Amino acid sequence: MGNLFGKKKQTRVTEQDKAVLQLKQQRDKLRQYQKRINLQLEKERLLAKQLLKNGKKEKALLLLKKKRYQDQLLDKTENQIGNLERMVQDLEFAQIETKVIQGLKVGNECLKKMHEVMSVEEVERIMDETQDAIEYQRQIDDMLAGSFSQEDEDAVLAELEAITQGDVELPEVPEDELPDVPEAAEEKPERDRPRKKQEREMLAV
Image 1 (cartoon, rainbow, N blue to C red):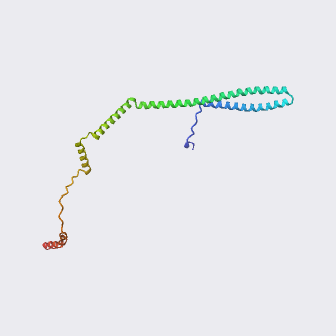
Image 2: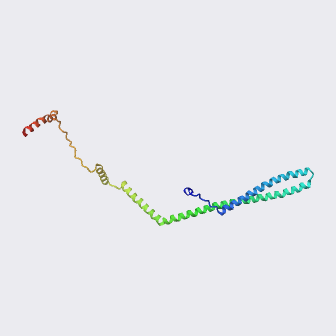
C-alpha cells in the first residue's frame, strides 16, 4: 500500500539550519533565565523593604547588593540575546543569498546552452533573411500599387473576368423580337395528332 502512494519526500537539513536552530534554542533559554531573574529580583526588593521596616538595615543592604549584581547579569543577558538574534538573522540572510546565487548559476547555465544552440552568426543570418523578405515584399507591393500601366490594368481585369466566368463563352442574344404565334396555330398540333395516328395505322395495313 505504501508503494502505491509513494514515499514522502524528506527535507534535507543543512548545517546552516542546525546552526540557526541551536542559536534560537540558546536565545530562548536566555530569555527564560531573564524572566526567572526578574521574578527573583522583585521578591528580593520586597524582602529588603521588609528588612528595613524590621530594623535589619545590614541584611537589607546585603540583599540590595546581591540585587545589583543580578541586575548587571540581566544587562549582560540582554546583550547576549541581541547578539544571538543578529547572528540568526545573518545566517538566515546568508541562506537566502545562497539560494539566489544557486538560481543565478542555473540561469547562466541555461543561457549558455541557448547560446550554443543559436550563435550570434545564426541570429544575424536570420535577421538578414527576414530583412530581404521584407524588402522583396515591399517591391511587390510597390509594383501592385502604382507601377502598372493602363494596358496592364486592363489585362488583369480581363483575366479576372475570364476566371470569374469559368472561361465559358455564351452565344450572343439576338436583338430582333420573335414573331407572335396565333393561339389557333399553337393548338392545332394537339388536334392533328389523332388523325395522323390513324393515317399511319391505315398505311401499315
